[in-house]
Length: 315
Image 1 (cartoon, rainbow, N blue to C red):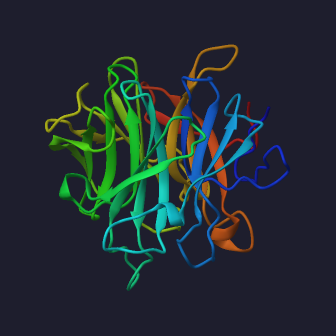
Image 2 (image 1 turned 90 degrees about the vertical axis):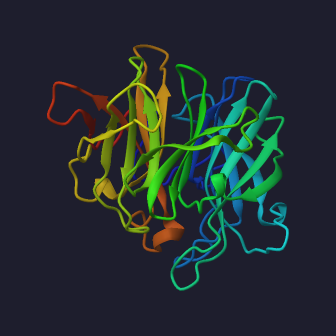
């Protein structure tokens, strides 16, 4: 199967895949890949969606089967508050201890005066990767307003992390609790300059990387790749700006959502940059949003250590 970046992809029923700001998980139960994402935007000028969709496939190249809507508007219940809900950037991890699939997402209400004001995360759990998911809570992790967010499961030590934009003041990284339903009492353990669309990965040598975007809303901008100075995430962690890995002013019209380490049937494993083309996939803007996935090339001897090159297709 071939990946065609920057185009609309179809599921096995011939329908357009609607799973934006994706989270990706290879389930330990059946080894299939599960793609979680926002449903289609309801209107070109609005951020509200119907909820969170799920697709599954034997490999990240597909073919993708629609598993259904795993969490919807009516599933979200926050005491004293009400929808419509903004449900963005869903990410799922499998918790080995509880044997549950745990979903996190940016939970908000429609913008007022051009800004999100609710600024929370939502959590939900399921026994199976395709759900059904049961909503658990909406809250501000560590008591801090939360916007764009991501999860990261460390492949070396198994620690899980929340990475989020803290009220446009900084990016905060916190460890998840043992059940993955909250952050730990340690609170924010590492920080990064203000940015959005954060996606983390880690090399076998212990070095952490982040790919992020600037704060320009739906409009694309030059990405930034960051590398940690050490091999631990704590208050001593410093981040080196490695420049724009795409060398393109709009980063091929994309914004990051996730990085996957993929092991093909033949050859070495590699990292894949997964992103959204929010505005430039069709005449209707947000409602025509599509996906761009591209291999990441790492080369420490190059002036550009992290490289993402445009390809019309790849496998």
